[in-house]
Each structure stands twice: as structure tokens, then as C-alpha cells.
Image (cartoon, rainbow, N blue to C red; front, side):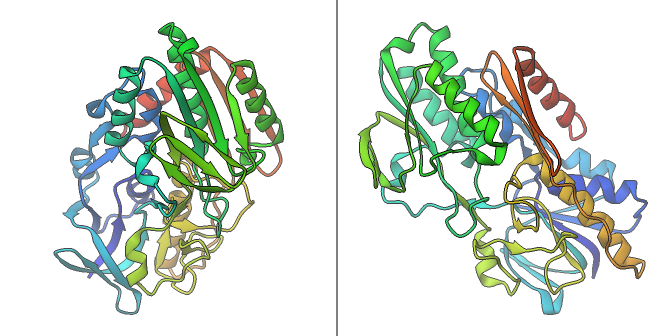
Length: 374
């Protein structure tokens, strides 16, 4: 039986590896993922401007795993049988003593006609296909929007959509093509992005108005066609639609016996421990966690959850009760291609400020963050 198995190769999984070793755990660790790669999704926002390509955002993690003496096993999870400490993979199975689940979530694709939209954070290919179409257009209407999981409203990724919206507006202005396009932002929420804080939402909406971006807010979505966005409050034309659906847990959860939230995520307690299972922990987009309703699904919080999961897992190995709670906080830079807005929120504070230099701060952070894994 493997002492510790980590499922996934994203932010939470790799953070768990480093924290385990830094905390002095010297026994065997096995990481299971379909590919030994970390893809840096936050920088997809720069694909339309040509500032990044797939190679720049794809990190081979095998050297990182070797440095930390971690065994890599290629495989896709089919289900977990927690009563037997067993993980079933597409090509075999693996037993574990302790388990950290960090396989990420998936987008909900139930809206009619969703095949007609581009979902940017689904993959590099989806974002590149959108970028290529935009580059070929002479003009038209561009629609940008996002929604949430109706059973778990916090399960959304709205921040990147604001960045695509403002970044493409800036790009078109730099290309002197902005007057040939109409930009429309839509969301079923009347105040989209409220997790950032009321002041931040008001400022984002004011920025849309300043840039001449139209809005269609507060109407539940009905679906899409090749050139229409349909809502209960009416429909409007769109020549090219960028849309981020709400999120739910990975598909393999349907075949497992792990406790799930109403939104389809693994139910975790305040210590990132899967409810009812002392040896299983979850971090990142796979889990549903206790905390404020603005708790984000982003790389930063995934890292914090991984730290908490590891410390509590190690405490359990020593026969101690879990005590380490992850910090509930939101930190992001809403990039506009030539500037940025820093938003910070925790249980006590919520503030924001803007500056042209924040664009470069975000680019520097990408380099700084990824250097540990290169």
C-alpha cells in the first residue's frame, strides 16, 4: 500500500508535494495524473494578444517530481472505493494509506447550443480557436459572459471573463479596430462578480460603461445559437461568443462513494478533510469547502487548501486531530492588457486599487510562480 497518493497535476497537487517534503515526510509519495504536465491557466487571457502560446504555459513536471522523490503514475481516475482504500484507474488500480484529491472540476455544459460558444479556461485549444477567429474578423458583435452552478453559486470563474473582456477591448483599440466592433457583457446576475466585493463590482461596471461596452444583466440564460445569446430577458446578436459556464466536480465522482455537495463537489470540512473519512483530503476545484459565500475557486486558494490538507494529514499520521484551517481570502489582479486592478478580500478587509504597473506585476508573478516547477 502506498503511504500517500496525490491525484492531479495542478496547483493544489504540486503544492501538496512541496509541503509534504518541507514538513519532513520522507516516505513514498505517488502522484497520479493523465499527463505529467502543469498548465498555467491564468495566462490564457494573453493568448488573443499573442503574448503567450501553448509551450510557454505548459510545464513538464517530471523534473520537479524527481527532485522531490515522487513516483509518477500515468492514469485517469475512474472511481474511488474509500472503504477499501482503493483507486480504480483506466488501466489498473492503486491502494493508498492517505489520499489527497486535487483533480480539479469541470464545466457544466447543459445549456442548449453551448457547442456554439468558446469556453476559454477549458483548454488552450479553445482559447486559441477563439483568438484565431477574432483575428480574422473585420467587425461585428463580440459577447462575453459567465454563469454559476445553480446548486452551488460560488462555483464559478468570473474573474478571467472580466480580463478577456477588458483585454480584448484594449487589444482592439491598439489595433485601431475598436470602432468596428460592439462588445456586450452578459450574466444572469444583476451584479456579476460580487465575490470581489460591492465596490469592485461597481467599479467594473463603471469601467464597462467608460469603454462603451454594453451589458445584458440579471436574466437567466436559456441557451445559444451560432449567432445569438438567449436569455429570459430577451436575446441579442453575437458573431463570436466567449462564455464561462458554472463548475461542478469531476465526472468520476459519480462512480465513487464519497460524500458530495448539492453542486456535485466532494464535501470537505473546515480542515479540508473529506466528510466521514479521516485519511482522505481534498484541495482545489474538486472540493466544496466551508467558508464565506465569496470563497473563490482560484489557484491561490487551491494552494492554501493544499497546505491545510497536508498539515492535517501529517497530524493524523502522528495520531493527532486536525487543527489547521486554510485562510479564506481572495487575491487577484484583473488584467486589462495595459493596466490592472488588484482586488483583495478576507474576513476583515476588502479593498482594490489600480495601476498600469499591475499588468507587469501579474506577468512577473507568472514567472515567479512557475520557476519552482520548471
